[in-house]
Amino acid sequence: MNKYNFVAPCLMGVEKLLSDELKYIGAENVKAENGRVFFDGDDSIFARANIRSRFAERILLLTGRFIAKSFDELFCEVKKIPWENFIPENGKFPVAGSCLSSALRSVSDCQSIIKKAIVERLKTVYHHDYFQETGAVFKIRFLLLKDEACIMIDTSGEPLHKRGYRANSNDAPLKETLAAVLVDLSRVHYDDTVIDPCCGSGTILIEAAQKALRIPPNSKRKFVSEDWHFPDKKIWSDEKILAENEIRINTVFHGYGYDIDENALAVAQQNAEKAGVAEYLTFSKRDIADFSENFDSAVIICNPPYGERLLDLNSAETIYRIMGEKFYRRQGWRYTIISPEDDFEKFFGRRADKRRKLYNGMIRCQVYQYFK
Ligand SMILES: C[S@@+](CC[C@H](N)C(=O)[O-])C[C@H]1O[C@@H](n2cnc3c(N)ncnc32)[C@H](O)[C@@H]1O
Image (cartoon, rainbow, N blue to C red):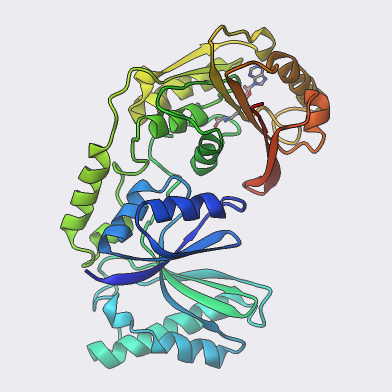
């Protein structure tokens, strides 16, 4: 088995959850930093992290991490990396990345220096002056952050939040990874009833059903590194089978999604079918003002319309007030609401039992949880 260093970018605020998830699947030396988690693992972890992570945005192979304050330093350090261990003679290796708070500020210059350094390294091994780059794709990603360079190869291809079930989307869909975070924070179990009263395209309920049923988020999709000469192809098929063998056949979990927008509900239904969880979810039209349920216990997870995006602030406030009335303290019920509105608790009418900062794209939000 080969050993690798990896780094997985994630949404800000999700580092701890992702670290725990990676440890759970067997990753070693897991270390969280702002917006990313470093870890080590073998060929199985390579495939497993891609197939099973609900919170990572991508899985990147970390090939070098060093200080670079000049283009010369960047060139020399990148050339030292044994690229021939990763990129075959015909490999395609486009370079992309970003520079933040660093002496090297020009992304395009860093891009061409890194490309040149890799070419120079590979020339010494493959004895070519020119590389056709007609084979598998080894997308090189770099990040220069406070003069520290991380040089990586993308193993995922399409980002991991693209689970493949969201063919269609409504106006303001929640990223799948963020929906998975809300589900995890709400501690959804296989026997829970989960309700999303403003379900839009159904992302939260689909992620909840997948978690309750232990459906791996990405066992059905393809990863760019499946075309590489490593890890062995059998590792990928074995890991996909292992993950799918853990799926629960469950008739207890059920999710209910409501919305006032019929188009969004139709999209939610289609997405649930694509995700293979339609039989566990029921979508119907209902205004949150008419919310009423008689379950002994339930988990409500909600991403209500935002003042900034979907509604004017007054309408958003009205919805928050309605939620406060409908989501009253009730034995066996717990509520998780994500909102960018700083005064959310004021309109809702109660201080949350727990609060946590998260980013929904560029929007700073808080997750408000009521469970006492
Ligand atoms: C931020 S979006 C939810 C997006 C959803 N989480 C997803 O991933 O697609 C808010 C949703 O609330 C719905 N909505 C607005 N007013 C509502 C009301 N009074 N009752 C129920 N749903 C409402 C909108 O139609 C919209 O689909």
